[in-house]
Length: 301
Image (tube, rainbow, N blue to C red):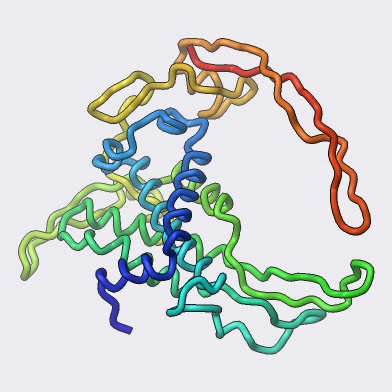
């Protein structure tokens, strides 16, 4: 099916509507969750400034944003809020052992198609940055397809599972973010190469280190080093890491030693009200008490 970028933009508006806006906000929320505990995350940078550079942070932002568009459109279609798309009709074959097809299977292929046309519409230049953005956008979308799974619901008397109906479903978006966070940590550094073609000079990307396995379509790529996020820097968009919450028991990047850049950390106690002693009542509700718990909170100096 021939699809244009303009068509893709219209589909995002018509299929997602408010869902698309909420999906983008949800993507931003989950993106913040993944960035939390890193020098550049959770208010640690100005997103627009960071995305101007071809760093691994920009690679992550493009990947999760592209995945967010695909996720929101796919979910909107399955919920029936659009008149031009719906359930995935391909998953209606023979049932499995102890279950049958039912519900509405989510059509992730359609969501990915729309995301591809929408997110890649401006990435048609013959330069390295467009090549990088297209690759990382596709890596984000591929994550959605790779994590599709069978979701089932039990039917029967007294909570039994005599019959199960199942449908094809997307994962929780936080799982997508966690996966892309790991891809961010293992992103492949590239170098820019120029080639003369009939349309002129074209820039492509090649893995910088020949000893390492070349990146696949599921890996994130970048070709510029990340700036120092320890101190505020308006040119790079960094707000620094002062007052950032850190994990005193971690030896990773979220640990106080690394996240605070050697400046040390402060500790304070914080009281939080939480649900506790929850009891399930038949049938069917849960009652909980409210408890006050005290936590130690560590922040960078």
